[in-house]
Length: 286
Image (cartoon, rainbow, N blue to C red):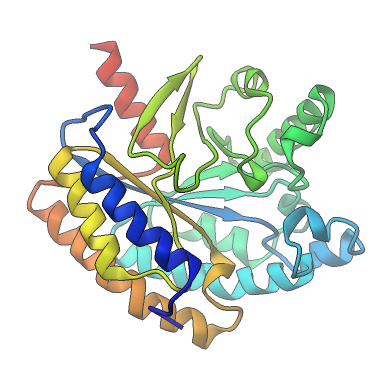
């Protein structure tokens, strides 16, 4: 599964050279490692509830049922390994998951580590394709649904990373969001956007990602004292327990071990999108 020649392999090499040569646009006290993830469905029951009508909102190849099932398998495994390394994550939950609940929500709420549980739309609709009123309706439903679980999301990750209606995020008291990335848009940067913080994505991971390259890019962020924000979907690493466990063992364990060593040397902090925003606010306030 790993280190195969792929578009993402080319992308990671390109990212390494880009970050090696690009002049930093902002500096912080020390390097930050930020990990954000999208929970696109969270429970195969949503595929049944929606009768397949929202499948293409989520994925062009797999149904909501299929993605939900894969996430039910993978998320507990990822939560366990990130908890073991003491690494908090931003986990953006699709609001409609609160209608059906299930083991994914239970896993997030029962984690022994404090993760940043944000929002990922309600129906996984692209915000660039829905009206202002429809976007507000989704945000209202997210607030109502997540409050039933004692959650008040402050981080928003747009479905398909299509950014729109930022005024509504401010109205609903969100603090930060992730902008759309890609090779020529990825940054090691956090910037103010109105009352919000845009936590730029730095690189996207999938099953072909190379832990050695990721370590080298993290080292660049440490030397330059910049935020390194990686993101992925839980279903990127296989749809059965064996494949996911292999991905965690081959990619995430060596990368997180390297990051933990840097953190223990005082060169790096582990942040969520929310905690990174709060640190930037404190910096700007002083």
